[in-house]
Length: 229
Image (cartoon, rainbow, N blue to C red; front, side, top):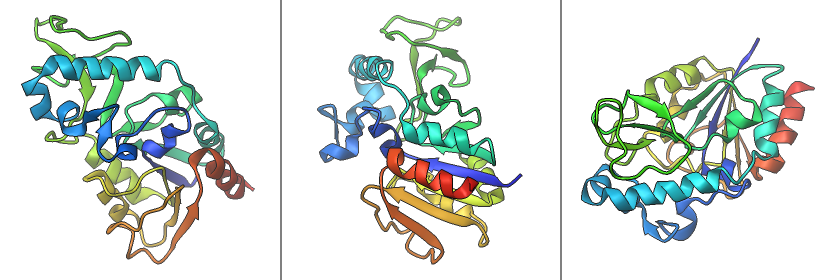
């Protein structure tokens, strides 16, 4: 069975109703991104960061997967599909995808401030004073700016083995995630779906890239139909 890797970004979830900070000139729900999505911001004001993610968690629980998410489940009936996502939501999983690598963490999980490998499922608010079993403050299980991306090597390995790579809903300008396309084999089929496709440095040299100006919810069902027919 051929292998397909999906590189999905914020545009994948936007059609489900989740906002992206890059839609607002670097502001995310009125906050400077570095204030709420960096290790420095957490160290300066953890209460603000916790409340920000508490609101994001509530928003996530109010939305549903879109047709793009569901199309990937259909694709997995015909190919071995691995989703490598920059998104921290669980919409891929809720649609039915069971091979998902989260590069930037997961919003519905919490971890210990002292040990990021101490992870628990968490769907409610996290408050100052909420602690893990060892008594350390809990924080969102999110990879912030200024932190390493622990799943990057695993994702790169998947891309290097793929017969088809589909980039969807991402500008491919956020590193290190943007570098993943460089691991694709020369023989791999490459597709790029985005409402406003950007010619990033990582994509400019790819002569075999099939660029489609479309959204995930509209473009993925069409592409999946092509690939399975």
